Image (cartoon, rainbow, N blue to C red; front, side, top):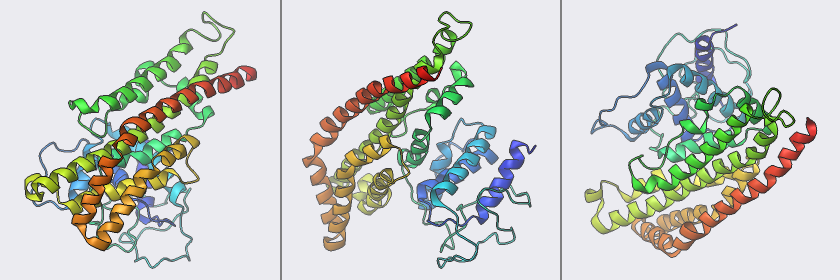
Length: 381
């Protein structure tokens, strides 16, 4: 049986030659880079970025730093899972299928199918700079400095796609002190920032739900105080609540990113780019455009119902971003920025009042639907 390290090397080798049918997002490319770098080198250095560092280098370092604290063995496992997820999402081009891409840089390795490991082990510890194999790119400077929260959305969507059976099976082998939610931290703002309180609240509530799901195993089932009821009944009841908290977290990340972009752009318009060190074009490139693409990805058919509903309620965000880009194309970056800020101020009530109310409604619906899943599990005992 192959060791985790050997499986990791084989997967790395395969990903360097993998050619997807659809080009992966910059977020997904950065995620693979960060996990591989963490697995090979451990925690990223804490020193400040070099003043002459490119946008791509800053993006890679930021993504790598987001994995701080993850052990190298866990990073290897997460890298393998993320590779498998991206292969499922983006597909693999047939050997004879072309899309005008250039030959891969690591051309000495053999092509393998999506589900098989390569025969030649990957012996180099160098982190791939732009996995999967470059498509029409001679370098990797097209990687954007994507905010940490936006970069995590594909992973949160993947977590939300966990089936009830998989969720129950995972809880059976998870220790109380090793829950998934207990390892999470705010992604939009630093822990010390008071404005991170809503995100801390979301994570904290979800962590308590997960603890209840893990604790019931000590009181329900054979050999415990209440032997007539299996712990799986309560866990099945809480499964949709777990999923809705993932959707609410995604909702918060995109809302926080949007409002942060409005504030950042307002400061640049008032005080100038030299004072704020944030050019208007950079805000569009690194915040607004990725946010619009993220909302669009939430509505794709492979997403779960909770994630797709989240994308639906965030459609106004995507529309505002697209309209602002249209103004930029017709009247210039200044006019597009003024329009973006104006629309953000005009629609404040939607982000501050309506979306939190919808989030609470979603949690209520999840609790009510949980009874159905609990009864289904009870009837199967």
